[in-house]
Length: 201
Image (cartoon, rainbow, N blue to C red; front, side, top):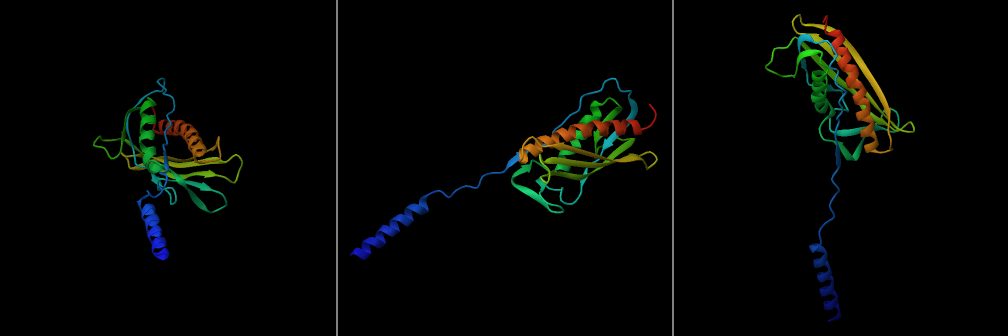
């Protein structure tokens, strides 16, 4: 009878445990790349339509994972922090908006578009990572840009933009803040590049 009582107690305890909710894994935090330089209404406008191509991304930076370095040559990713989309896909509308607000072109469209364009901006995300080998850590952002004349099918100019920004905190959110600060400076430089290399006013 004692053994039967023990078995009954164990069964009751196991049944109670089975009814308890299992612990839920915490959903990852999601972050945006979002930066806009100031408008420049005094810029002379060119009678050109500029198409902004969808940026490409080098291996390691073509996913929503937020990359970081803690030692040379090893790219790691935060487990509980992600971008809301791949960085390259978030950059395309930011480039289009910054160039449209620059006042340097008659129209700026995001490719593919049904609007015939005179020029196309092609870009590649070379690097976007938080480097913890320095203190404070810093975000490194690199972008390669190429301006193509669609009328003559030739490359007018190409340039690589490199920006670095110290993170205000040693975590993924600090890296996100630093990335957006670096991106704001890069947008201004990219706009100047496109306007200056697009030809005479």
